Structures are given as C-alpha cells and as structure tokens.
Image 1 (cartoon, rainbow, N blue to C red):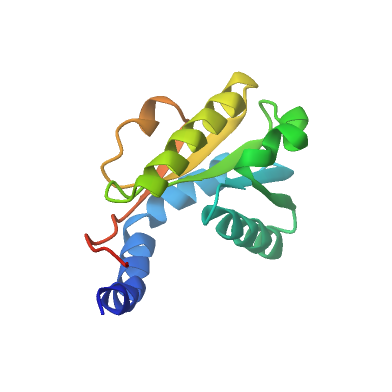
Image 2 (cartoon, rainbow, N blue to C red):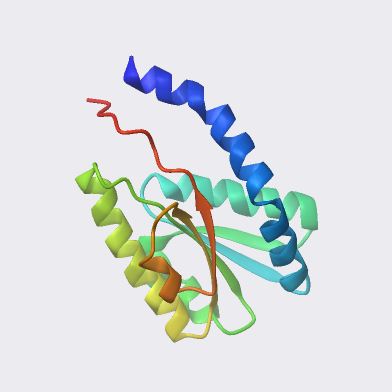
Length: 151
C-alpha cells in the first residue's frame, strides 16, 4: 500500500520539479547550447533513466546524446570525455536503502573520473545532498522519496 501511495505522488513531484527548476534549466540550456554531444550516466535503476534522458535530448535538440551504464564507462566513453563534453549523471540516493547508498558512492567515483578528464558534470541529485556540490559544476535537485519500505 505504501508503494502505491508513493507512486500516486509522482505526478505532483514532477510538477513541483518542473515548476521550481525552470529558470535553472533555461540557464543550463543556454550554457550548453553549443555542445554537439552529451553523455548521460546512470548506475543500476538509473541506467534506463539515463537512456531515456539521452533519447529525449536527441528528440528535442537533434544533437548526439548517449546513455551509458556508469559502471561500464571505462569500456568506452571515458576516452571521449573532455572539457567540451557535458555529462549528465544521475546521482540520487535514499538514505533508508543500503543498496541506494552503495550505488550513490560508486556514482561519486564515476563523477570523479569524469572531472579528472575535465568533463563538465550536471548531476541530478536528491534535495539536501551537500556532498555532491563540491564535485560537480551543476546540480539539479529532485525531491527526496517518502520514508517507506517497499518490502
């Protein structure tokens, strides 16, 4: 029942994010409007979201964008990262979920690899995450999940 309740909150949370982050997204769009490529990284459950983000960017901008599993980035996109490549990294976490916290820690390591190659990171992170601010160029915050255990 708690999972169904949380699912029913998703439209409201999406509306909140779209309303409250519009100006930030417009600034990012202007800043990265000359980029010819984008990389989206996600680990675990975030990988299909990265794929969808890349697809949507392709559809609206007609530029090359690729979604890639963060855990596999050493096997391909690492070689392409430079100061001209914006990298969107999905780096949310649920403090109540040990698997989420582990995924987050590994994602922070991926972010450090990207920034070591001068990649420009736009992170999507959970509200209240102060750790990620010092590691990336830009952060788009999304609401925290409600405290519930789906098991």
